[in-house]
Amino acid sequence: MNTTPSHSTHDAQEDMRNQDILIYVNGEIVPRDQARVSVYDSGFMLGDGMWEGMRLYNGKWAFFDEHMDRLFNSCKAVSLDIGMDRAGILDALTKTAAANNMTTDVHCRLMITRGVKVKPFQHPALSQSGPTIVIIMEHSKPAESLHKAGIRLATVPQVRGLPMSQDAKFNSHSKLNCVIACLQAEQAGADEGLMLDPHGFVNTTNACNFFIVRGGAVWTSTGDYCMNGVTRQKVIDLCRANDIPVFEKNYSLYEAYGADEAFLTGTFGAQTPVAEIDGKKIGVLDGAGPMTQRLQKLYKQLISDHIAS
Image: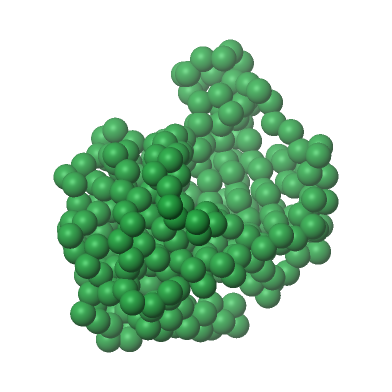
């Protein structure tokens, strides 16, 4: 029986300051225990909304433009009017960070829903009062165990679907597909679920994008069925800029099981090593392998250069 404590890619070091954070709700900044949205809100009722996860380093939001590109493209695609431009969102983020006296090692969840409905039914036209905008910021550092021990994955039956069912590029409030995958993985004794695409190729996990390393080359999925992750793209760009072979391609569990290394990417955890897949140890080291460590260092430098610019 596996006795390794379970964890997820979003495990953070405990910080008691988060019990007293202030939260932005539709232009007001209120104490955590007073932050409320209506039960008629389309996000609560239907998962009708989009969100972004971002990190604050030394007073600057990492890759703000890339996150806003994804948010505004997603909202346009579903005809959700945010009601403010990028400068307005940045102003709201800045005010919320200042109210919380936050400058670095901060994780933000920015949520935009279609707003409060006049009746508890599906049609978007029933949301008539404008969008709901919520900003939650927490003092947040990834738990050290994530990088020392790595994540255990289990391949799950829940797949990332075709774009005409629900395009995985939507970072939507409708996350049931991923929640089911997470439950399936935990019930199989793993930390997170490794999800395949509709054709059976390795795709992503329920929470992060997925990479493997084979023979000095970095592989990831084609991107057709996964979240268009900001950190995912930064890793691909770093490989190309540093003469590391990188491939966006179809590959099966056969290649994943035999990988020299595997890691996950996401805004919160950056690059998190994978320890095993379906009970099979990945690589010969505990924690991050040499390529993962190299990419972690390159990414940290990228962040430093970005916030200094």
